[in-house]
Length: 135
Image 1 (cartoon, rainbow, N blue to C red):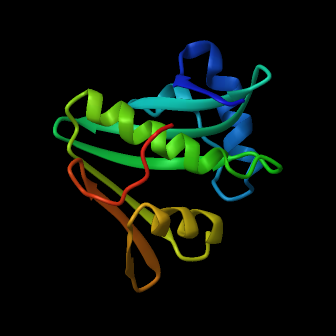
Image 2: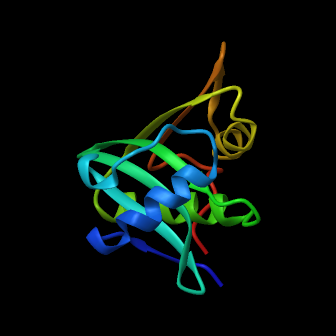
């Protein structure tokens, strides 16, 4: 069972490892990103993470990462993220996903992202129907 929660300073090394495990993003320093990190944790290990820059009523999402071998963690993390944002009055979320990142593209489309040449634009409003809810 994956537990999803907001990350704190002690999680930054694990977040850095999770992001690096995708071989997609360049090295990051979570403590210098600003914003908020949400993480999915299984058996004490961070298996998924996402970074959010929140400025009510808007949020921007980036660095969505899922460790290899943990498929299914991405949709659960995004569903929780939606719930987390709505609880805080955030009504609009935006993320740009490069079309070469196929797992993230599939996830973005499942969350009603729109196709743009070379990118998937994940953009939803808090009252949009058809977006998966957190369990």
